[in-house]
Length: 278
Length: 312
Image 1 (cartoon, each protein chain N blue to C red):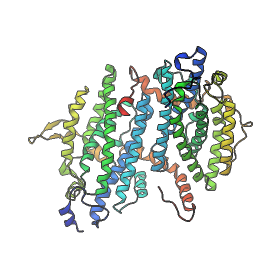
Image 2 (image 1 turned 90 degrees about the horizontal axis):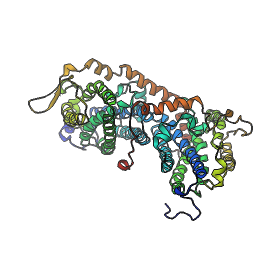
Image 3 (image 1 turned 120 degrees about the vertical axis):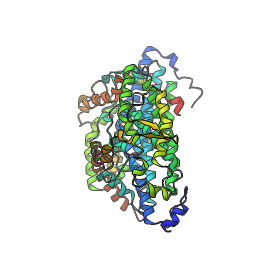
Image 4 (image 1 turned 60 degrees about the vertical axis):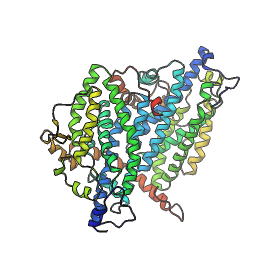
């Protein structure tokens, strides 16, 4: 971690109201994606095809929850509480992409692998795009997350090779790709503060540029495995749904399940274990 | 080595893969370790429910890590069982899926509320800890080695469960009452966790004679009650009047056997309880649904060049 921020960086106390709103949008997008992606991945625990893959997907889910915690912690520094970030937040205000909220069909390990791949490549691109952020507290936290994402991509790529090795697997993976691709594009749907996020230097790339890089990365890799990547201009743009208040029913069901205990049991504050467990 | 020699030599970590052991020993050890490994998987199945229900991000992380630990324990234990050359891991996992494989009674009951998290994670795991601690001195060395790691991690699980119990018992009156109701339901099951009294147990004599098992059911139950009744009371739980628990003349604790539902216990032990069918079945259906993945893996491994790679 760098002790002295770059001279042109902005610390949290120096944020203008506009800047703070933009940082918050950026952080919520990062955190919500990680949280919801991890929540879905845990569905594979006990159900993964082998004990080894069960352990691996659990590792990834924990990393992603850990990243979500990093980003929610930055929001806490800006005055939010954990209930405001997660437990009491209106489900329509969550800004994760449609890709991560999709439920898994029983046995669709191909979805888990491909979703992980599409997500992890996007994650790498957007973490790199905040590595030189002007927001000092964020800059400190990117390195660790990037290292872990490299392992996730390796995991996904190894599995993609195996699953596309025969005709049956390839057909399954093509179906998964056709299903997931439109939802994956919503990873790059802009929010209301997108222009500010870039203008203030909180992110050094625009979402449009990141989307291009993502397409240029996943396209050749998937095609080398014999898969046909849909034309992004031809798929209906996420059916008009996206990150902002237009989630699918699957998200609302998931949100109800996730928050059920919190709503039922009247805890004063969600318990934090960091001091004792790490 | 004949059985007599095995019984003579029986002691902590006495035997290992280098020893030629009678089939009776190897089968008994396999049955015991396979039961243990199966219980890790089916305990994980229940614990998984709590990951989604966890009411804080940190609790959720601790819970998903716990489920992962349990699968890791299963992996270690199946490997320890394989060293006995009786069954392969694939055979044991198949037996778990078909309902032939047996596992701990408490993991046959369904769970659906956060209040049940401390039942599994504190009391059942605490009971398991009592048993596992004694298994560090089992005579089959690979099993004892697995216990070193398992016990270390179980220590964290029990703390996690205890912390959830403490939190719930510090909640509102309604929360405390709900916790007590849940405890009342689970307490007899937890007492049965240690099985019937010594004279009714089928496998104990041999397992003890050859050093696989180093403590009797009664000793383990006593040790659990001595440790966990005070803990339960400390957090404000009341021990139900029934099943009646009493102190024997020699200072050990016992439960009035007639107060427990042994018909249910034996139904469970045959995997014929409602929850057995549901939990074994839903895991099997999900495992069948990913059979295609295991087939793809085999295809890939057999075509991966002149030196085929091993399964792990």
